Image (cartoon, rainbow, N blue to C red; front, side):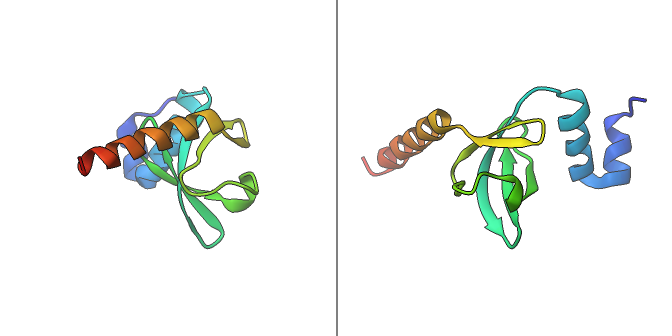
Length: 100
């Protein structure tokens, strides 16, 4: 059964709506940026929707750190080293342009 976006916002809040989109309508690999750690959770931002979601630290690679780009395939997360480096370089150039 397919529900409207309003159904999920009313009944589950925005996280429930985002979870529904990510698991049932977007059955593609997801990409997140690891923002920070809070207790047993990693707060990750979906690079497409910009929605933050909590992820159990134990589900991530041990070496994951804030700023890393994570690819999710099913229940598995991997660090996308190429995308992480590209993103860091882009941010560094933006930062440098502020001072020039």
